[in-house]
Every structure is written in C-alpha cells, then in structure tokens.
Length: 86
Image (cartoon, rainbow, N blue to C red; front, side, top):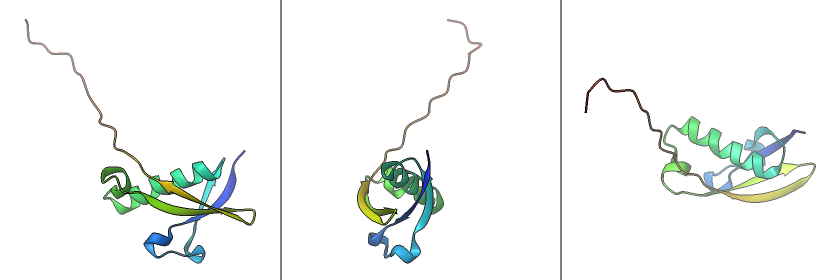
C-alpha cells in the first residue's frame, strides 16, 4: 500500500518546506524514487554517474528518517541479425 512521503535533501540546501511529495510503499522506496527523479530532472545523472551519494530526509506520519542514496548506470546492449556470411 502506497503512502505519500515528503523528501528533501539538506545537502542541496533544501528544507522540509522544499520537500517533494513522493508516493511509495516505504521510506526506502521514497528515497530511491526521489533520487531517480532528481537525476532525471537534473539531466546530469550526478547520483548515478559520478558515484555521488546524497543524504535525504524522508518524512511520513510525523517521523523523519535519513537515507543515503546512490545509484549506477546500467549499460544497454543491442543485437541485430547480420546478413554477413561466415
């Protein structure tokens, strides 16, 4: 069951007033969704590409927890049948 979490990153100068609302099943999932959205919006994928990690605060039901988030880029490979003969 999803609930709404408030997520913000003090390292980026954010306070709870700047928090992003994230629908997630857990605080852990909310932190990861925040990181994915942050990277996508930033277009630099700094969390996934540069081994940067961010400490984010996640708040729900009056409890605030802190999460260290990081990521990695996954290469994508393609294959296409070749018409060349051996």
